[in-house]
Image (tube, rainbow, N blue to C red; front, side, top):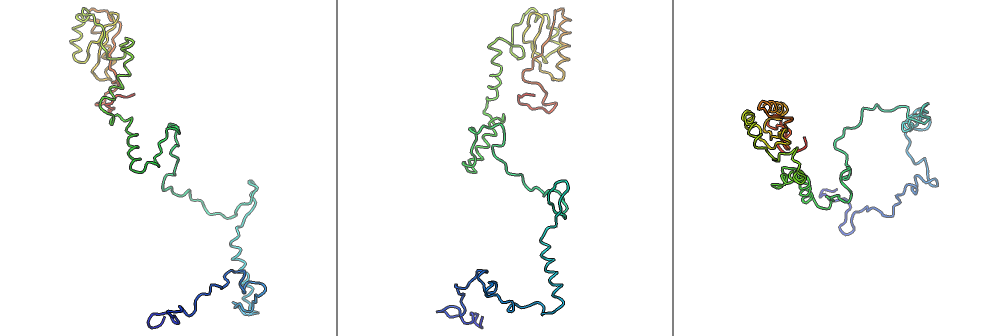
Length: 258
């Protein structure tokens, strides 16, 4: 550049004084330096003059450097194959920074025809559909009355067949027997409610106490009834879906298979 910052020899009309000639041969085989027809080693500058003792050692170094690129191998006697002689020490697999990508259908629950194509929905709609699917079977997000209707459908067979054992449905009560066992009912108090008397010797109660005391209370209730001079062959405490005491053992307050 000159004092004004312009390229030396630059002309606004004709451009720079030494433009690049597009006709220049750039292909190496066509170069006059490499082509055997025009090659002249005398034009190539030499690192050492002729007869210099460094020529021999320099040639050995060049051969050694070329040999570094060749991997030294040997025939493994067990594998019967050529393996490298020198290998780097293995320090374990590289640290996994993320989980590998897997197919959306990598499960055994969803059928291919029932698959939801989230990629075609877009981010906003895909998130909305995913939340709806996640909450579809979650009791906390079901509409009011859905859970109760589900459990009532499970107990509807009792009413159809007239079977009340295993449920808290009331049955027939013999008033004379109910009067005779009233002293036992006074002792048990609000812990139980008389549901029915089957075959005049089996007493069904709805039990409100702790589940951990259920067996003992059944046996004790049987003793109290027999003390009233009433024939008793069995006492059944019905608890319905309640199989745990959530306030005492940290169980779930929702109905469920425990």
